[in-house]
Image (cartoon, one colour):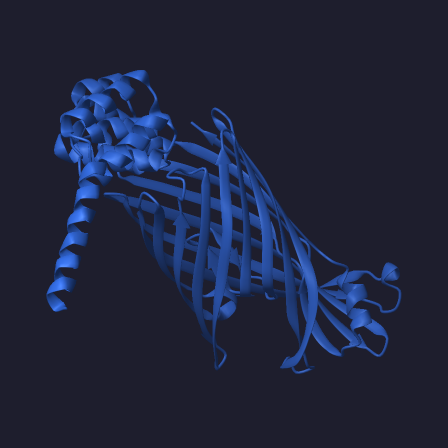
Length: 440
């Protein structure tokens, strides 16, 4: 019985190997001639399909990598083009055809530092043909964020809570940024932001609403330096210096708000905060990973933040990019310690001159930094969630963006001696985003 089973198993393996041998009918000569013919015909779709079949059958060589990489390049699948052109370049670093296609594939995929670093490795004749030059000032951008809250007076009166409540009022934020290129593997960006950061303290006593306004101005200076480490590794260092002040404006009457007016009390509150951190990222052919760590002193508290970001390239290009992020925040100050996690998810779609990004933030978003310190949530009220949409238009030298986000906010009531109560006040906030970038 055992011998029969063994013979049956050997016969089955023999038949399986025979069938696979019949299917693997390709030879090196056939792959070379067919792939070259498809290349000359510029039938990129069939060339890529045939290349996959050849590699599945164990046949791969230098010129097949070159043809496959160029085929993906012509199909605008730049990340997969980079994959095979890099493989070819590792086998033959002197092929100027591969050098030129790889250089432009890096640029079209958005790996500008990678393309600039690779430029130094190309032949002198090819460098003279492309004539790439670094510009000390490579881009200028301006932006505005306009914030709007609901009618908090009406909501506060309808809330039937007692105590003191501090609420952020509407504000406008204006930015001016400059981008510099110091060398082929470094990029430096810095930005100045000014904004009106007004807030109001509301207290409901019986049926009368008492308001104390705080008119404030805030200035931010943000800087980010990116260092290309090679092989699509990038190191970023960033910091943000924030300073501002509030002037107390007291309401002189109660009752009908239309008859109220305010008097400057002469009291002034000044503050200064810092944010600094670093991140390291690796861009691959199908996804990009990034780890960031930072420290901040927003609103007189100490925050430590550690996060992980993941972007996917399922099509082998930047047309469709789903992304997710998780950021851990540990906060200490005033004898209290708090920890929380903020989650982000979304998708970016880019086609031709248009790009659309939709995103969702979930978690307790307060004293929180995003995008390596580029975005700071330092309002005293917390956002429980944010949903947004950003539209970008890419022109020849100018890029335009406009966006909208909606946030569900909540703030705590305070007692007369400024102790935080368990009662919260919920309201909504909306932000309109606009910006323009001029590439020089």
